[in-house]
Structure formats: structure tokens, C-alpha cells
Length: 380
Ligand code: B12
Ligand code: SF4
Image 1 (cartoon, rainbow, N blue to C red):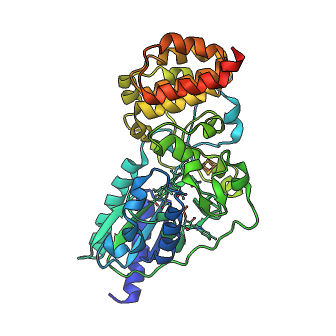
Image 2 (spheres, rainbow, N blue to C red; image 1 turned 60 degrees about the vertical axis):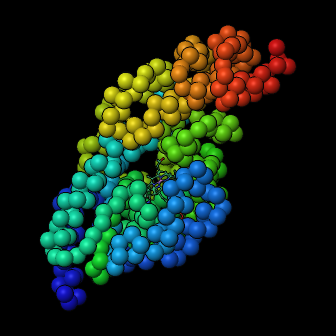
Image 3 (tube, rainbow, N blue to C red; image 1 turned 90 degrees about the vertical axis):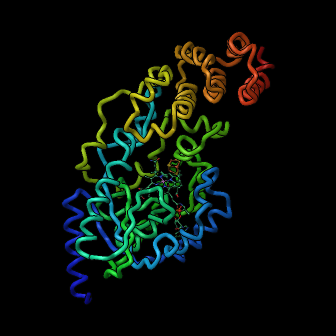
């Protein structure tokens, strides 16, 4: 096909993408060597923490031919999830858990995969015999650098992609193709001298502009980390029970955000009362989060986060609910409840822990008890 025909095809695909519900469309060359270099440096500094999947496919991230042989272009797509104005006042509602805006309702992987498949069918119709692959989030590809090259926005200092006149409250997804489509103009960086995101970060996770140490990021600590949350970050987590939005909340470009058209991302009006959440049993957890991204955390991971948030709520009246979960079958939850009780009751927590966990044998819980004892033994 000559370049004029291909330009027309791209316009058709752009129109179809918006019709299907995507909010941004661009084409990048399948070239990630430079970003791959940075990615490797990032891994070398252990900034990926325990996300073993990040290091597993380095070669694929650096050379997209290993993902789709003969790859030439990547169609990059933006999908808006801005469903509510959000500011930092959630921090004052200490007995209510804060959930990242993207996770208030349906899991975006389901919604976007359906849309990608629909667009991929149109790609196949417009470009017969081409080979393609769709990705949203989970594939071994560098979505942000590709989207930047496709003109969808620039990688901000907080390391999310953001767009002039739109902000950053959106997901990225892609269709990989072995056809050389005319590519879009890469977006220019408009962060300027602003460093609001760096300064607001509660755990100092943005260690330099454009560089994130995941091990410090609350999103990683509350979603990706499977085991115990390191003590040094528990207070800073505050009442965040799933992810963190702070660096995006303060970004001036997000004042331009436009409301999402996808109803599946809007809150169902559920409350996030911490006391209700800590009392969820396995069945109730499964039922409530059946279609939510929170399901991936499993009850043990989610209640671990809720226990930390309760420990930070400053009201000892919630202590009985934490004492109840000292009997939970999950050691991870018991361990974080021990910490939370220490925060709320001080040395009095020791009496409760001694009473409820006299027969404790799990190493993680015993470690928390020992820490509590060391911390408060002088006060007894
Ligand atoms: C691993 C991962 C995480 C990790 C690491 C985050 C990160 N910054 O990479 C954790 C768990 C912390 C995380 C958190 C979040 N994530 Co996440 N995550 C991913 C994932 C799966 C891979 C990202 C990756 O490759 N990181 C590796 C590092 C090396 O990339 P990087 O930090 O961006 O570094 C690049 C640039 O910053 C640049 N760079 C580095 N140094 C320098 C220096 C200079 C001078 C310059 C100019 C550039 C530069 O080069 C690097 C390599 O390209 C992507 C999906 C995907 N497959 O891409 C989603 C993804 C990035 N996450 C997403 C989201 C929504 C989030 C959260 C907002 C969720 C939340 N609310 O809790 C937070 C945001 C935290 C933050 N400030 O980044 C979206 C972002 C959408 C957007 N608008 O950009 C993505 C794209 C998923 C999706 N499909 O929509 N995530
Ligand atoms: S998501 Fe939260 S913890 Fe992570 S870099 Fe942004 S402000 Fe910091």
C-alpha cells in the first residue's frame, strides 16, 4: 500500500477507536531501544522491588520483534478513568479507606480488552493479512515510552504519562502490528520547573525527576507487595487501602481532566468504612470485589492494608475490631493487626496480644509481637 492509502487507513482507525470508546489515538514506531536502556538501569538499581515479572522479559522490552516478529508499528490508545474530582481531603476522613480513582468499580483490563478486540478486528479488515497483538498493562512492553512517541502525552516527573489539556487520569493500551503505518509526532515535555508531584509524595518514592523507586511507592506497597509492609512506610500510608493518587492529584495539568464516558469506572456508591472492611470474610470479600481490580489482592492483601489504615486512624474505639482479627486464619492479617493495636493502644496492646496470641507460632506474627514488646516494655 502506498503512503497515501496508509494515511487514510490510520484516519479510519482513529475514527473507529473514538467510536469504540477510546479517548486518545496515536501511532508509534516499534522502537524502544533507548527506553529499554533506561529500563535496564532501573532494574539494576532494584527499583522494581519484588515484581519479578518486570525482570523476566527484559529482551522483549528492549526488542519488540521478540513480542511480535516483524513488528513495525504500535497503535497506542488512551482511556480516560476520571470519574470524580479528587483532592487531598480524603486524608482527614481517617476512618474511611482511600481507593485509587481507577479502582472504584470494574477492572479496566476487562473493559479495555473487549474494546481492543473490537478495534483489532477493524485493523484486520483494513489491513488484510497483517499480524497483530493487543496489550493492556500486563504485557512485556514499555507502554509509556511508546505512548509518548505516539504523541499521546509525555512522561511526567511522577513517571506517569500526561497530556496537555487532559491530565493523566487515563489507562494505556496498544495494538502491535507488522505493518509500517505513518507515525504520529511525539509529544513534547511540558513539566517545566514544576515539582509538585515530587514534593507531595508521602514516602519520597520519586527519587529524582522521572525516576520512581517502586519499593517506596504506596501503590506498590498496597497492591504489588505480597508480604508484610515494611514498618518505615506504614504511618505514611495513612488511610490509603488500594494504590495512591497523590502525585496525580497535585499535578496542575489534571485540572483539565475531562469526565470519563465509561460508566463501569464510576463508583457504585459503596462506602469504604474501615471497620466494615476489616470485618469482611472470604465470601463477602469475593462477592464485593468480584469484578474489581481489588480482587487480585485477595482478602489477605486487602485486609493487611485495612489493618494498617486502622492503625493510622487515631481512634482507639476501633481496637475491638482489630482484636477480633487477631484470631484470623491469615498470619499476614494478624501480624498487621498487632502493629495497628500498638499504634492505637500503646503498651496496653501488649495485654491483648498476650491474651489472644498466647499460642502463636507464625514467624511473621511473632516478629511483630517481639517488636511491640521491645517498643513498649519500658512503658509497662
Ligand atoms: C510496574 C508498573 C507499576 C509500578 C512501577 C511504576 C512505574 N513508574 O514504572 C508501580 C506498582 C509502582 C505502579 C504504580 C502505578 N501505576 Co503502574 N504500571 C506498571 C507497568 C506494568 C510497567 C511500567 C514500567 O515498565 N516501569 C519501568 C520503569 C523503568 O518505567 P518508568 O518509571 O516509567 O521509567 C521510564 C521513564 O520514566 C523514563 N525515564 C527514566 N529516567 C528518566 C530521566 C529523564 C531525564 C527522562 C526524560 C526520562 C526518564 O525512562 C524509563 C524507561 O522508559 C505499567 C504497564 C506497562 N506495561 O507499561 C503500569 C502503568 C505505568 N501504571 C499505571 C498506573 C495508572 C499506575 C498508578 C497511577 C496506579 C495507582 N493509582 O496506584 C501508580 C502510579 C505510580 C507512579 N507515580 O508511577 C498506568 C499509567 C497510565 C499513565 N497515565 O501513565 C500504566 C501504563 C498501566 C496502564 N496500562 O494504564 N505501576
Ligand atoms: S503514587 Fe503516591 S507513593 Fe507512589 S510516587 Fe505517587 S505520590 Fe508517591
